[in-house]
Image (cartoon, rainbow over all chains, first blue to last red; front, top):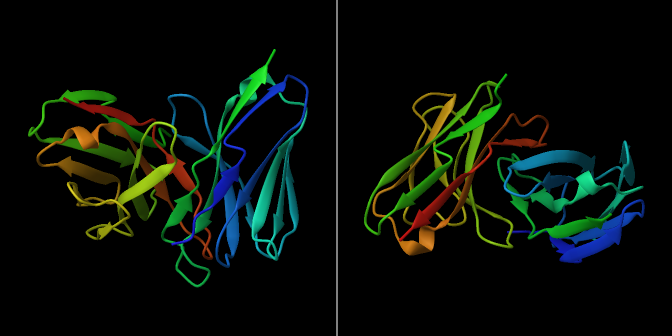
Length: 114
Length: 114
Protein backbone atom coordinates (compact mmCIF):
# COMPACT_ATOMS: atom_id res chain seq x y z
CA UNK A 1 0.00 0.00 0.00
CA UNK A 2 1.16 3.53 -0.58
CA UNK A 3 1.52 5.89 2.30
CA UNK A 4 2.28 9.52 2.69
CA UNK A 5 5.05 10.40 5.08
CA UNK A 6 5.07 13.90 6.55
CA UNK A 7 8.15 15.91 7.28
CA UNK A 8 9.01 17.29 9.77
CA UNK A 9 7.43 15.18 12.50
CA UNK A 10 7.16 18.27 14.71
CA UNK A 11 7.37 21.99 14.03
CA UNK A 12 7.31 24.93 16.44
CA UNK A 13 7.04 28.48 15.13
CA UNK A 14 6.18 31.95 16.35
CA UNK A 15 2.68 33.27 15.83
CA UNK A 16 2.53 35.21 12.59
CA UNK A 17 5.22 33.16 10.87
CA UNK A 18 4.54 30.78 8.01
CA UNK A 19 4.52 27.02 8.53
CA UNK A 20 5.50 24.56 5.84
CA UNK A 21 5.12 20.82 6.06
CA UNK A 22 5.83 18.22 3.43
CA UNK A 23 4.43 14.88 2.39
CA UNK A 24 6.10 12.24 0.26
CA UNK A 25 4.36 9.22 -1.18
CA UNK A 26 5.43 6.09 -2.96
CA UNK A 27 3.29 5.36 -6.01
CA UNK A 28 1.20 7.23 -8.56
CA UNK A 29 -1.95 8.87 -7.26
CA UNK A 30 -4.85 10.78 -8.73
CA UNK A 31 -5.30 13.05 -5.73
CA UNK A 32 -3.88 13.93 -2.33
CA UNK A 33 -5.65 15.32 0.70
CA UNK A 34 -4.60 17.20 3.81
CA UNK A 35 -6.39 16.89 7.14
CA UNK A 36 -6.04 18.68 10.48
CA UNK A 37 -6.51 17.12 13.91
CA UNK A 38 -6.83 19.26 16.99
CA UNK A 39 -5.84 17.62 20.25
CA UNK A 40 -8.42 15.07 21.34
CA UNK A 41 -10.60 15.56 18.27
CA UNK A 42 -11.36 13.80 15.01
CA UNK A 43 -9.71 14.74 11.74
CA UNK A 44 -11.07 17.57 9.65
CA UNK A 45 -10.62 17.71 5.89
CA UNK A 46 -8.70 20.80 4.74
CA UNK A 47 -8.07 20.49 1.04
CA UNK A 48 -7.88 18.03 -1.85
CA UNK A 49 -5.54 18.51 -4.78
CA UNK A 50 -5.89 16.52 -7.99
CA UNK A 51 -2.96 15.05 -9.87
CA UNK A 52 -3.45 17.50 -12.74
CA UNK A 53 -3.20 20.48 -10.36
CA UNK A 54 0.10 21.93 -9.23
CA UNK A 55 -1.14 24.37 -6.65
CA UNK A 56 -4.33 25.06 -4.76
CA UNK A 57 -5.33 27.73 -2.26
CA UNK A 58 -7.91 27.85 0.50
CA UNK A 59 -7.82 30.90 2.73
CA UNK A 60 -4.41 30.93 4.43
CA UNK A 61 -3.61 27.45 3.13
CA UNK A 62 -1.55 26.77 0.04
CA UNK A 63 -0.98 23.24 -1.17
CA UNK A 64 1.39 22.19 -3.91
CA UNK A 65 1.73 18.85 -5.63
CA UNK A 66 4.74 17.65 -7.60
CA UNK A 67 3.86 14.31 -9.15
CA UNK A 68 7.34 13.89 -10.65
CA UNK A 69 8.86 14.00 -7.17
CA UNK A 70 5.88 12.29 -5.54
CA UNK A 71 5.62 15.03 -2.97
CA UNK A 72 3.23 17.65 -1.67
CA UNK A 73 3.59 20.60 0.64
CA UNK A 74 1.15 22.43 2.89
CA UNK A 75 1.89 26.07 3.66
CA UNK A 76 0.00 27.92 6.37
CA UNK A 77 0.59 31.64 6.15
CA UNK A 78 0.40 34.14 9.03
CA UNK A 79 0.01 31.38 11.61
CA UNK A 80 -2.33 31.75 14.58
CA UNK A 81 -2.55 29.98 17.92
CA UNK A 82 -5.62 28.13 16.63
CA UNK A 83 -3.46 26.48 13.95
CA UNK A 84 -1.79 24.39 16.66
CA UNK A 85 -2.72 20.86 15.62
CA UNK A 86 -1.44 17.76 13.84
CA UNK A 87 -1.58 17.76 10.07
CA UNK A 88 -1.89 14.61 7.99
CA UNK A 89 -1.64 13.94 4.30
CA UNK A 90 -3.72 11.15 2.82
CA UNK A 91 -3.48 9.33 -0.48
CA UNK A 92 -5.80 6.82 -2.15
CA UNK A 93 -4.79 3.21 -2.16
CA UNK A 94 -4.27 3.17 -5.90
CA UNK A 95 -4.65 5.49 -8.87
CA UNK A 96 -6.93 3.05 -10.61
CA UNK A 97 -8.85 2.05 -7.51
CA UNK A 98 -12.39 3.04 -6.72
CA UNK A 99 -10.87 5.22 -4.00
CA UNK A 100 -12.75 3.32 -1.32
CA UNK A 101 -9.71 3.60 0.96
CA UNK A 102 -7.22 6.32 1.71
CA UNK A 103 -3.99 5.91 3.61
CA UNK A 104 -2.89 8.46 6.21
CA UNK A 105 0.64 9.45 7.04
CA UNK A 106 1.90 9.73 10.60
CA UNK A 107 1.46 13.49 10.69
CA UNK A 108 3.28 16.72 11.52
CA UNK A 109 2.65 18.21 14.96
CA UNK A 110 2.54 21.97 14.62
CA UNK A 111 2.87 24.22 17.66
CA UNK A 112 2.37 27.97 17.42
CA UNK A 113 4.16 29.97 20.11
CA UNK A 114 2.51 33.24 21.24
CA UNK B 1 -26.99 17.96 10.86
CA UNK B 2 -25.00 16.12 13.51
CA UNK B 3 -22.50 14.72 10.97
CA UNK B 4 -20.72 11.67 12.35
CA UNK B 5 -21.37 10.71 15.96
CA UNK B 6 -19.76 8.02 18.08
CA UNK B 7 -20.83 6.37 21.32
CA UNK B 8 -19.46 5.98 23.87
CA UNK B 9 -16.81 8.70 24.18
CA UNK B 10 -14.79 6.83 26.80
CA UNK B 11 -14.70 3.23 27.98
CA UNK B 12 -12.53 1.14 30.27
CA UNK B 13 -12.60 -2.63 29.83
CA UNK B 14 -10.92 -5.53 31.54
CA UNK B 15 -9.02 -8.04 29.44
CA UNK B 16 -11.43 -10.54 27.93
CA UNK B 17 -14.51 -8.34 28.11
CA UNK B 18 -16.50 -7.47 25.02
CA UNK B 19 -18.03 -4.26 23.80
CA UNK B 20 -19.56 -2.58 20.78
CA UNK B 21 -18.78 0.90 19.51
CA UNK B 22 -21.53 2.64 17.58
CA UNK B 23 -21.03 5.08 14.73
CA UNK B 24 -23.87 6.98 13.13
CA UNK B 25 -23.91 9.42 10.22
CA UNK B 26 -26.73 11.56 8.90
CA UNK B 27 -25.17 12.58 5.58
CA UNK B 28 -26.47 9.59 3.59
CA UNK B 29 -22.91 8.50 2.85
CA UNK B 30 -22.31 5.11 1.27
CA UNK B 31 -18.86 4.53 2.71
CA UNK B 32 -18.00 4.15 6.38
CA UNK B 33 -14.75 3.38 8.14
CA UNK B 34 -13.30 2.43 11.50
CA UNK B 35 -9.75 3.54 12.33
CA UNK B 36 -7.57 3.29 15.38
CA UNK B 37 -5.00 5.88 16.37
CA UNK B 38 -2.19 5.12 18.77
CA UNK B 39 -0.13 7.84 20.49
CA UNK B 40 1.94 9.92 18.09
CA UNK B 41 0.81 7.93 15.10
CA UNK B 42 -1.48 8.28 12.14
CA UNK B 43 -4.67 6.38 11.58
CA UNK B 44 -4.77 2.70 10.74
CA UNK B 45 -7.82 1.26 9.02
CA UNK B 46 -9.53 -1.59 10.87
CA UNK B 47 -12.59 -2.35 8.73
CA UNK B 48 -14.68 -0.46 6.26
CA UNK B 49 -17.96 -0.67 4.39
CA UNK B 50 -18.87 0.48 0.90
CA UNK B 51 -22.58 0.11 1.44
CA UNK B 52 -25.35 -1.28 3.60
CA UNK B 53 -24.84 -4.97 4.27
CA UNK B 54 -21.19 -4.99 3.11
CA UNK B 55 -17.97 -4.95 5.09
CA UNK B 56 -14.30 -5.45 4.28
CA UNK B 57 -11.04 -5.81 6.17
CA UNK B 58 -8.57 -2.99 6.47
CA UNK B 59 -4.97 -2.92 7.59
CA UNK B 60 -5.45 -4.16 11.18
CA UNK B 61 -8.69 -6.22 11.35
CA UNK B 62 -7.66 -8.94 13.82
CA UNK B 63 -9.62 -8.94 17.05
CA UNK B 64 -12.44 -6.79 15.65
CA UNK B 65 -15.72 -7.44 13.90
CA UNK B 66 -18.10 -5.01 12.22
CA UNK B 67 -21.64 -4.84 10.94
CA UNK B 68 -23.50 -2.44 8.66
CA UNK B 69 -27.13 -3.41 8.95
CA UNK B 70 -28.37 0.10 8.26
CA UNK B 71 -26.81 2.62 5.91
CA UNK B 72 -26.44 5.23 8.64
CA UNK B 73 -24.84 2.96 11.26
CA UNK B 74 -21.54 1.12 11.44
CA UNK B 75 -20.79 -0.98 14.51
CA UNK B 76 -17.36 -2.08 15.70
CA UNK B 77 -17.17 -5.03 18.07
CA UNK B 78 -14.43 -6.33 20.28
CA UNK B 79 -15.25 -9.90 21.30
CA UNK B 80 -12.41 -10.40 23.79
CA UNK B 81 -10.58 -7.19 24.55
CA UNK B 82 -6.79 -7.19 24.92
CA UNK B 83 -4.47 -4.48 26.29
CA UNK B 84 -3.06 -4.06 22.76
CA UNK B 85 -6.47 -2.71 21.75
CA UNK B 86 -6.07 0.30 24.03
CA UNK B 87 -6.37 3.15 21.56
CA UNK B 88 -8.54 5.95 20.28
CA UNK B 89 -11.07 4.75 17.73
CA UNK B 90 -12.39 7.00 15.00
CA UNK B 91 -15.28 6.43 12.68
CA UNK B 92 -15.51 8.22 9.35
CA UNK B 93 -17.90 8.36 6.43
CA UNK B 94 -17.61 9.52 2.85
CA UNK B 95 -19.37 9.74 -0.47
CA UNK B 96 -16.80 9.09 -3.11
CA UNK B 97 -17.30 10.98 -6.33
CA UNK B 98 -15.15 10.52 -9.39
CA UNK B 99 -12.56 8.60 -7.39
CA UNK B 100 -12.18 11.30 -4.73
CA UNK B 101 -12.81 10.28 -1.15
CA UNK B 102 -13.21 13.16 1.31
CA UNK B 103 -13.85 11.67 4.72
CA UNK B 104 -15.81 13.12 7.62
CA UNK B 105 -14.75 12.02 11.08
CA UNK B 106 -16.48 11.48 14.38
CA UNK B 107 -15.04 12.79 17.66
CA UNK B 108 -13.50 9.47 18.66
CA UNK B 109 -13.85 6.88 21.40
CA UNK B 110 -11.02 6.52 23.91
CA UNK B 111 -10.76 2.88 24.94
CA UNK B 112 -8.55 1.55 27.70
CA UNK B 113 -8.15 -2.19 28.23
CA UNK B 114 -6.70 -3.17 31.59
